[in-house]
Image (cartoon, rainbow, N blue to C red; front, side, top):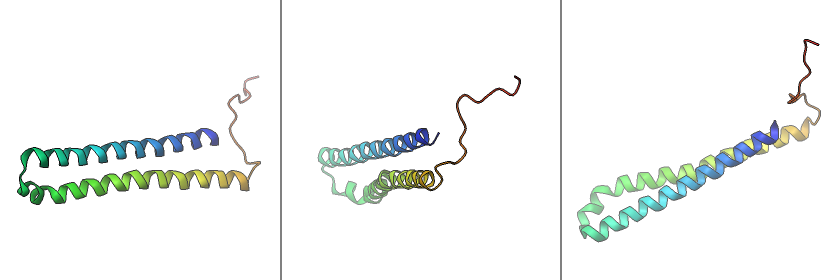
Length: 98
């Protein structure tokens, strides 16, 4: 069970990083294209705070979620190392009806 949890946590961390990076690139590319197309400096003054908030949010997601999942994976591996003979649930549990 612990290996599937480790794989799931690794997948969640990588997926969050990938989506945050894609969102960051999309947000900044959209801002650059809008500035080049409109050539209006007031656009920068109006939307800088929203652009910065979006960048910070995506940066926090892209770094924070993988960090939290890495710490959780380390905790699981550490618990497994400390208690190697812990009770785990087997996939093929014996039937109680026999």
